[in-house]
Image 1: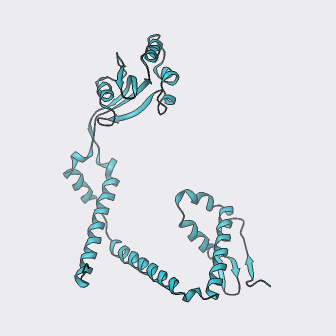
Image 2: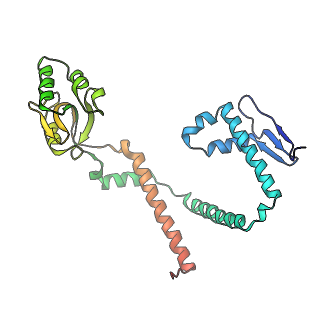
Length: 265
């Protein structure tokens, strides 16, 4: 006879609140709330599958197996094992500390006035620097360079020539497009040539860098501009909130140190 009587009740759709999905022995239940709590604890990339009926059945089976082994471990005395008790005490301390910190930080907030003041006091931090969007054709030799230049001189589309001749694996498939970049992001000769171009212009002569020969075309430009508050409001809110929470955390530690002096040996 099996040591534990196992009854499993699976639902084909979404679980109703507190619905018992499995009984183990005479005193243990696993409910849909247990399954939901498990799903909620998973990283975001797994939640889509484990929110389905199939995924929830898989989780239910895991919870059943874990509960079976936990009951058996308790029956064999592991509940009183010194190492288990030591680990439980450590976990208890961590959980208690987490809840203490959360309860003391929960009422911290950042209002719109604080956000506006920080923005106005630090406008220089929120300047969008000048940027250029460029495409390039990268080749390894001067012979390959002449071939690519000859194709462009025939009036062929720059992107088409880049797809055919460029050796840059990161941009060739996109017609040589490198997207927007600001000063300091590219090697100096490439950057100097790219920022010297007007929108739509192509370098008259190739640019040599450690990567090879580049034919560069500026496809767009973006002038330096002040980023509006509405665009970065949430970023500022999160930064100020983290700042306040860190300050409060440090205060909690310092208060505790005064009550319980720390002596480093």
